[in-house]
Length: 162
Image 1 (tube, one colour):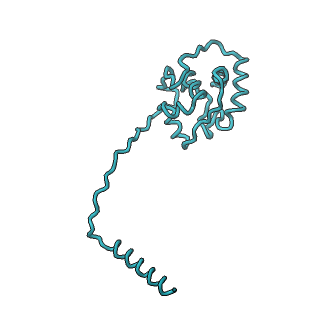
Image 2 (image 1 turned 180 degrees about the vertical axis):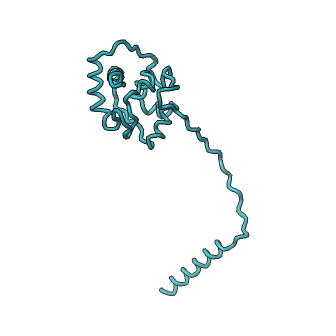
Image 3 (image 1 turned 90 degrees about the vertical axis):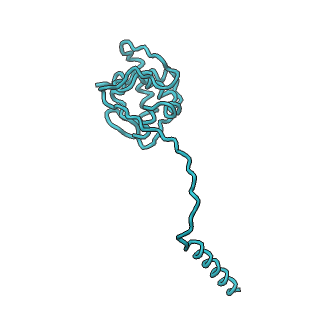
């Protein structure tokens, strides 16, 4: 029995050596299909040159901003603290971007669209795609907020600008 195993292993090794040993063997070229790649979109994170009219991808097309509504901002702060502060900090980058002064970099519509449907924004919006790359592929979690909740968070963001 042992000799059968030894002979089988010897023959297996011999076949392996013979099949790998020939350098002159020509292999048929492997056809490769072009891979569709997107060029990274450079986004401006500074206040200069940012298009604050860009609304992103989503159902929010217009946001009316009047004087800061303190009551709505307080509700937004509560929502931000309970739903967003695990990944976002004011005044510093964390898991997600620094959101202090976000309304100097993004339109209120873009912010609300990102809050309401981050999956769609990451899939279709070039700015959101770049942010995903910039933050190590950590996608924003959908917190299932209502339009009213998202508007309250935007109002809170208006109060934390410098």
